[in-house]
Length: 264
Image 1: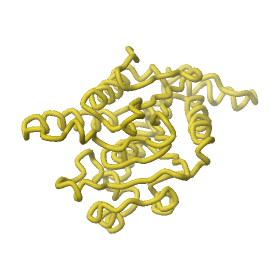
Image 2 (image 1 turned 180 degrees about the horizontal axis):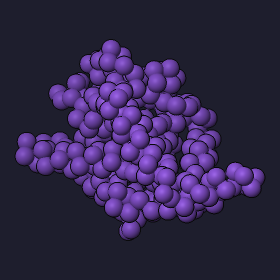
Image 3 (image 1 turned 90 degrees about the vertical axis):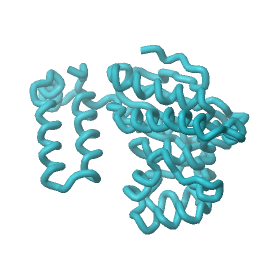
Image 4 (image 1 turned 60 degrees about the horizontal axis):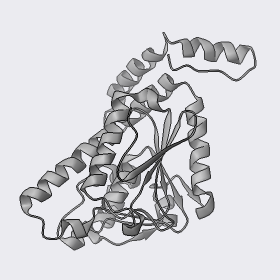
């Protein structure tokens, strides 16, 4: 898989872990068309080649911005047709992120506004720096969130809180994000990336097929009734039964050693 992009820095800090940095710090990592395309291609590539990593951490360059949303300088004066074509790329990107088979941790190191907050919410969970700020300002700019924020936010906060956040457009703090179920953990700014990578390291060391199957089953929990969700869960569980990793996990437990998973 090609991991070279115009607007993203992709590193492998250790085996099985990808660190992806949105790299437009001069614009608080606002998404221009190139970044939207790069993110789409990254997550589409991981769908095709999930063996490229076992866990991914997504963050922004610099100390002030995770992603401030779409680049409104680029959008200034856009025709309706060009705007819709650009947004079609965003739609593909969000669908690819939702479908990414490997776990994705958002390390929110600064502002996450609009589409930037939608990207974070589309990840599996969020660690946030204590100074991070969040908002959906779209209704103050004549539009509405359109990158699955209205789908993912209520799943974190409940519908009533989500309506307050989206319909006012008012910013909120990292502490509020934690209290409302948006963020899993608050971190000192200097420790954010280390903590996110430490969690990624734990996930990456687990059985890859088991992790990916569990992620799929958990994603279905909010979409299906309990009986249908359990049917999906059992189908995902059965994918793990014939694997070498299952045999290795049990063997390692009985031999009192750390398992060595192969992803097969």
